[in-house]
Amino acid sequence: MLRNLTARILATSLTLALSTSAAFAFETKATAAYVIDQTTGTVLLAKDADTPLPPASMSKLMTLYMAFEAVASGRLELDQKLPVSADAAAYSGSTMFLQEGERVTVEDLLRGIIVLSGNDACVVIAEALSGTESRFARDMTMRAQQLGMTNSTFMNSNGWPKPGHRMSMRDLGLLANRLISDYPQFYPMFAEREFMFDANESANRFNRNPLLQLDIGADGLKTGHTSEAGYGLVGSAKQGDRRVIFVISGLDSAAGRARESESIVNWAFRQFSQQTLGTAGTQLAEAPVAMGDQPTVGLELAEDLSVLTPISASGGLSGEVVFTGPFRAPILKGDAIAELILTREDLPDVTVPLVAAQTVQPGGFMVKMTAAAKHLLARLNAGPQDAS
Picture 1 (cartoon, rainbow, N blue to C red):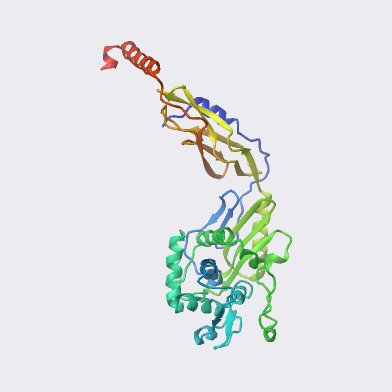
Picture 2: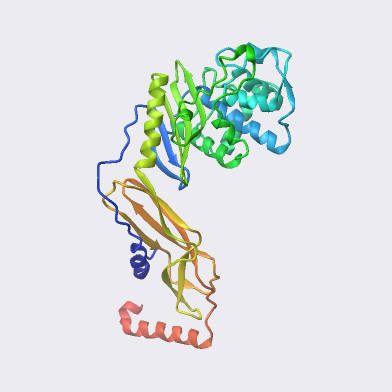
């Protein structure tokens, strides 16, 4: 692979001067954690992020994703009333206090899961979609695999403690991202602070997410707690054009979970900034072309380019254009033929595709003759030994 010198110089002109201050690393008290800047896809923190752990009620997000899919595809209707079975009504813990035989709308069940963390509501959805909760759990595991959640195995619909029911923090972060991106029409439900389903059980009407009451842009998603898992939270917050998703598990109290969650959100927004480096069509470099009707081809951004950088970094941001060359004509405008690799201090490199800025057609007779003559002259100048 050749690194073109002109390309390297042009790319390095993207270097940003960043201020120097204290280290930005976050030391979380959670036993496992995952934090990602959704806007740029930058992973800010990963602590035991791929270890399958008991997710408690945070696994209800998978039930919600499959319910949203079913509504979007027409398998369920929001105003459709579903029956409550004896199995659903038998669940304890956090519930909607559903009674066997009553019928509840899908919309109420969704809010019951999101706001009230209803174990019973999850079972009603599960039985409607798969017949039984155990079959739904198998369907959940299969769908999770299809979504790229390779460290998730479900044994029930709601996270009730059961051997083998596991999710990793990265999987929960991926799932949160899909919920936000795939179903924006339903996502506002996660920010609802209160849902009164049964006036006789009015004490159970408040969202358990401690961040919703704070002015930090928090708008989701789900808490979790069991004695085995500790206190956890899948959260998201948006400030300006940036959105952060985070997952924590293993805190020792609800108050500790709230403090840790707020600290992570503040750190993610205050210690990193989004930098716009160029717009689509900006040419960053040129690359040589062999046997073309022009000797070089421009390399330009296919899309607007912005990256996340730590505000406390001292080394700045540098870049290099990398390609295998010289290219052979024909080359069509818009062909992806090179990459810009951006290096950031203490964060993963960013690889950005670069495309041909113009079309380069094969050269005519004189171009081919000139190329052949140059090749022959090079062989003659190399001498007998080197030319052999």
